[in-house]
Length: 92
Image 1: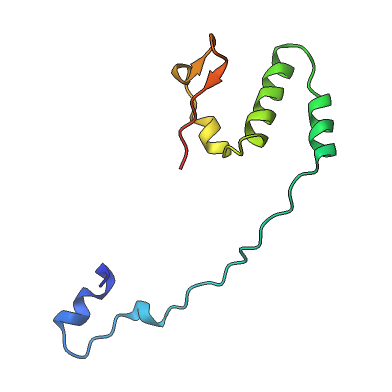
Image 2 (image 1 turned 180 degrees about the vertical axis):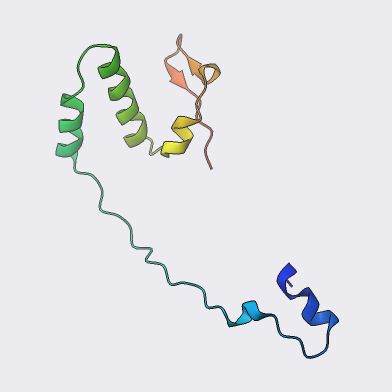
């Protein structure tokens, strides 16, 4: 029994108003994947300067293992290992 319905057990004849609320119907169809050609086009726009290398790494990290954007944003310097070229990502 959820916290919303505790008073129903305590008071005779009381019905919680939340019982009248219907849950919204959500569309859970999967999104179309990004085409390989589009990914290659994105990677071609990355130059060889600092920002281009950074952007290329971000694109590959988001696409290859399927990391969520928020998980990538939560990465700290302590999560990077320059010696091995690895990154620790903590995700749900």
